[in-house]
Amino acid sequence: MAPGRVLISFDLELGWGQSGRLSRRELERVRRARELLPRLVEVVEARGLAVTWATTLALGHLDADDALQFAADNAGPSALPELFPEVAELRRFPEAYFFPELVRGLARRSIQDRKPGPAEPGPVEAGPAEPGKTEVGCHTYRHPIWNDATPPDLELEFRLSRQMASRLGCTLETLVFPRNRYSSRALAAARAAGFLGFRRDEFVSNSERRSGLHVALGRAERFLDAFGLARPVRSGATRPGVTSEGGLCSVAGQRFLRLDDPNWMRQVHLSHVRRELRSALQRGETFHLWSHPENFARSPSGALLAFAALLDEIGELKEQGSAVSETMAQVCHAYRARLPLR
Ligand SMILES: [Zn+2]
Image (tube, rainbow, N blue to C red):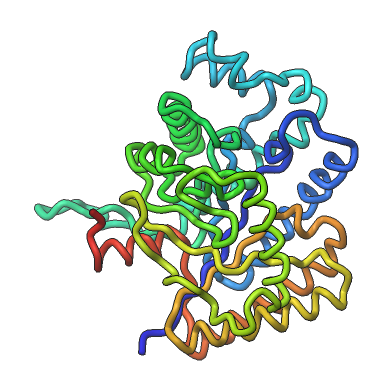
């Protein structure tokens, strides 16, 4: 049997992930996440594992003026009030909204570690470069929460994401919707914008709008599931790891990593994660771990240490040939190669 696949994705959004002004507590959490981020990148890269950094692309701007200029150039000055209603906030806390050196570094590496195509294109046209270990995914341009977005809103957000990526020198192939929430309209817009696939969360995602109660119940279930309490036996996936939805690859994000709890909870969580990881790999399934740097922010050292130990285990499974480590883009390419999407 073919080895199972391990995916790791992180959502990079910092302050953009909060709606409106940051409370003092949120700001503190974002600042800690920012401080931790370079170490997090290093921990994954040092182990040679593949990772998808689902990035809110506006983080790549130098500052508020750069963002305003870019948006005015690409969407027209009249779009600015709607795109950036809280300009004062962006100027006041630039460290929460802009992290160009990190985003540029990831973008650079996402290109460097791709397999180069033939140096001299011959009569047979060279195909696109193979996706590399570091993938910059799209977590939209500004992280809007899409419940009632109109097709023009969606089109603009994806267009600005792509334009920003091209300024950073990378291409975007996969997508994580803000809060994992989307509608069939959002899927159609993502497909039209040329994305290959997206990550879904089994507890909160849905292809149509969910009520606040549904989302709250989904979150409660996800919390219980972190400790193996939602379902007595969870084999890594209740649905296949990759399916087709709205003409895109829908890649399950089976395991939301909670590393910021008190140590005993973290240990219970991690032993559950290890069990489901091994069981998914034994079945040759895809197992997808995801989180945010903010989920490490309360006790960064402990969380990082626990994460590094989990990565070491994945690294060993990879060495033994029981797992391959891939980005979301790689999984989507593999899925499409076998099964053309309709
Ligand atoms: Zn997000």
